[in-house]
Amino acid sequence: MGRMEPQLEHAEALGQGLLDIGRAAKASGVSVKMIRHYEAIGLIGKVARTYANYRVYGGEDVHNLRFIRRARMLGFTIEDIRALLSLWQDKKRSSAAVKKIAGAHMAALERRIAEMQSMLTTLRHLTHNCHGDQRPDCPILDDLAQAA
Amino acid sequence: MGRMEPQLEHAEALGQGLLDIGRAAKASGVSVKMIRHYEAIGLIGKVARTYANYRVYGGEDVHNLRFIRRARMLGFTIEDIRALLSLWQDKKRSSAAVKKIAGAHMAALERRIAEMQSMLTTLRHLTHNCHGDQRPDCPILDDLAQAA
DNA sequence: ATTGAACCCTCCTATGATGGGAAGGTCAAG
DNA sequence: CTTGACCTTCCCATCATAGGAGGGTTCAAT
Image: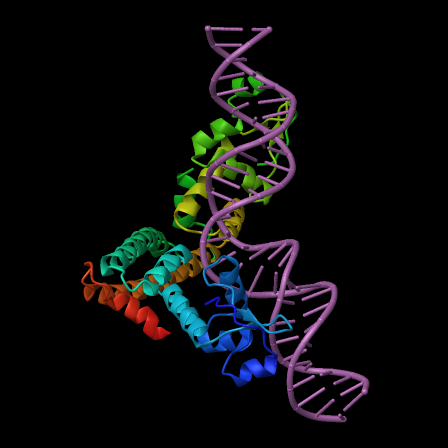
């Protein structure tokens, strides 16, 4: 990524199997907005441009974008992904480094899930006893108010 | 809240059982920053001020802040809380209206938890097969890369 | 050729909830 | 009367994503 090849005409680029940002977005599943954003924050390098200043993406770029997309779908943060991309590039990486990142992420997910489940448990208790009719009496409000 | 009583001296206000923002924060568990923020977005009304322009909080104000804090701990959004506060104030409310808000929130929590659990399941599979040693081979990276 | 749709570009703004910090005024205790 | 702990307002940052304005480019259909 960011090899900054010589500039091309748009048509010429497409003829060589290169993609403009819209096509790269479709091919990778990452939105045009986000591709530009990932470049701006340095998650991906600067790519080549046509004479008209259009970004031009090759197969490897799309590969990277898909990697990012998949990692986002698994909930990794951008900083995690920055590290994962760098490990991916590094042929001398240790799988332990990768596993460590994944493990920390899993722990964070578990903590967050536990928090939300605790909220749910409380809410289920409260709504269980709420009539849900036209009367004003409501254990949900009572709980919130009593905390007060 | 927001009754905008006549201005007072600071000492005079504290003598009457009124609180400055720092004391209101301690009494309610809501940070000073967030109390000001809630006022700025109209979640709570504008309170009275001393001659020195210090905010002055009464018992009811603290009550409202505790209500907000409790609702935030249960994961309700600010907009949910705006509605809940208004229902709380409304003696002619229907408990159905309250239950509806809580139900929608629970459904949102359940969706989010399910998403995160699905991420976790995938990550557990991947890390299960990752040696986590000094070798570079790593099913986690393989998964991310193969998506690409 | 001209025009219009559908792209592309950069730059600015917003989201939701929270916090950090600067610059300056006020209060209370020593 | 100083000092430290408050208070005030205003601006900025977070995190990932999206919307839009204003302007240039490409391409296909008139």
